[in-house]
Length: 243
Ligand SMILES: NC(=O)c1ccc[n+]([C@@H]2O[C@H](COP(=O)([O-])OP(=O)(O)OC[C@H]3O[C@@H](n4cnc5c(N)ncnc54)[C@H](OP(=O)(O)O)[C@@H]3O)[C@@H](O)[C@H]2O)c1
Image (cartoon, rainbow, N blue to C red; front, top):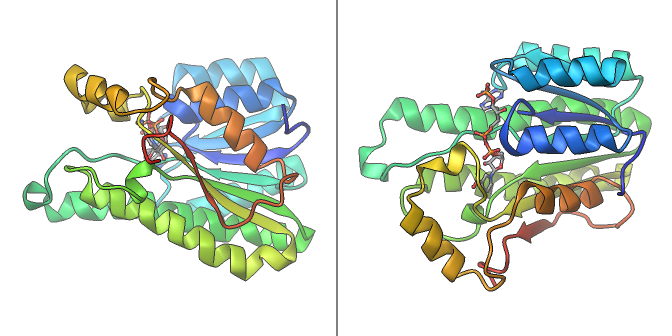
């Protein structure tokens, strides 16, 4: 365990990896504010269990005014923002030649504009405090090619690049900016993969297994602990498939 008593904003905590990260961060004594477009039963359960330490709002990551309001409300509610985890994203499962313009805009809006707006709103509070940690959930697709994921991959490559630039921009102010890039793991997003595709990925992975939510949590928790001096990096959690 690395984080404790932190006030953390995490996008997309309603299900999948974001839900696991939220649950584990809460278990370790942190406060977490999260949002997603729809409320899930898990959000009600966490509200009942953790009371003031947990906050959920129904919010679309591309709603600029809503995101700014959410960050302001969270800072007031918790008193500070120690860390931000950019997790919310949508996937793609289509060759580029078949991907319509609405889909391209939706992926880039949610996966690029969304985390950029959230980061911009959060760093205002971190700059005033003179410290903070930002961890964006990227993907191995941001650095390696996979067919059918070109727009999604571009959005993850953007996060990697933004991380490096922002580390230069605000690193001196005591804010650590990094990415965690998982390999494929089981979730609604990766449910489009066929069993034989998953088997191929496993075969090509030196560790012989896909990463799971807990593997990724352990690295995210370390990255936002602010104890590592890691700055502007993309950390792969992929069993070595990119090695
Ligand atoms: N699954 C994989 O194999 C894999 C591999 C590498 C990296 N990743 C990355 O890991 C992260 C989590 O992925 P996952 O597989 O856990 O995804 P997931 O199961 O589809 O969950 C995505 C979460 O983001 C929220 N979200 C999506 N669009 C949103 C929007 N416009 N506004 C607010 N919230 C939004 C979703 O809630 P709503 O839909 O209700 O809004 C949900 O809470 C993503 O950044 C993904 O790119 C995934």
